[in-house]
Image (cartoon, rainbow, N blue to C red):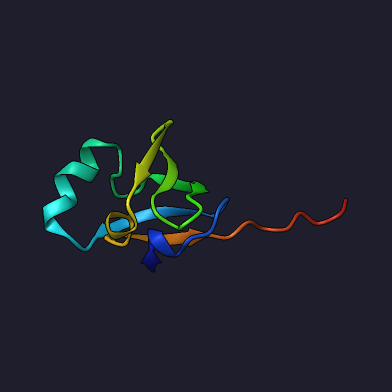
Length: 82
C-alpha cells in the first residue's frame, strides 16, 4: 500500500484505509470510501492540489489530504497479441 499522493497522472488505485481520523468523515462524504477505485487526473504545476476521479466525479485534494488515503495501486496488464 502507498498514499494516494504518491501516484502520478493517469495511475489508479483502490482505496484501502485512511491514516487520519480527522479527515475520515469528510473524505467519505466526498465518495472516498474503502474499495472505491480512484484515478489521478491532474496535478497542479507546483504539485498541490491534485485532481482525482472517484465515485463518478472529479475531486480536488491537497497533498496533505491525499497523503492520508492509503491505496493499493492497480497495475495495467499488457494485452497479449492474438
